[in-house]
Image 1 (spheres, rainbow, N blue to C red):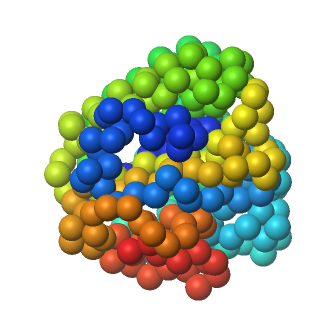
Image 2 (cartoon, rainbow, N blue to C red):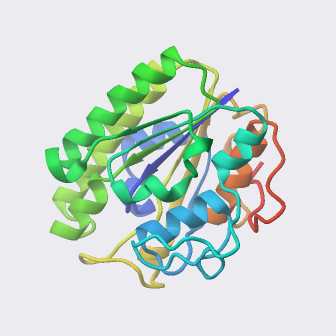
Length: 258
């Protein structure tokens, strides 16, 4: 079994709840549209918390500038590397380079969204991921789509342009789910939401995120349907390792959704 973690930056649950494609996906998924991220609800702190399953007060990154951990906690890729598992990254926002230690990744593909436009960069990294993952045995891959966050800051969350950016990301997700092998489990989520042209507060619009699990694990490792228990972004790292049959790191604060 393989796991693909897809993160759509700034994707609010209510932005996708009534989308026909998402509604169809939910009928064959385990999901919640009321998971919560961490405070501050800012991109890099949320990502570091996702990968290391601890709050920003523990890992120390509280802005979009990475702060090395005083007492390091292993992240998803470091844990999987100890078991000899292969991991890959595909992303278009450079600050995410610090989410893993260099020797824990087998492959990383970066396409600078600011250079070619995040809409095109989303498509580019989707192409790269499909090529690489279909040719190389990879237990865990992370794909980051940054277009939605850019559109939210420029035009406003829930604006027409923001919703178009959501559709761009859904197009890419559809391709990944169609063109990758059937043994993948897909986790689709966000780092935070947003309101007006910003985020970072404790407002529900900023704090609520979707978590959708689809693919090979649904019906075997997790039941199809709405997840009733509370879910945190901290729960995603132990969920990834559980899907791959590995132990969570002892320092992690989240619990597997499975």
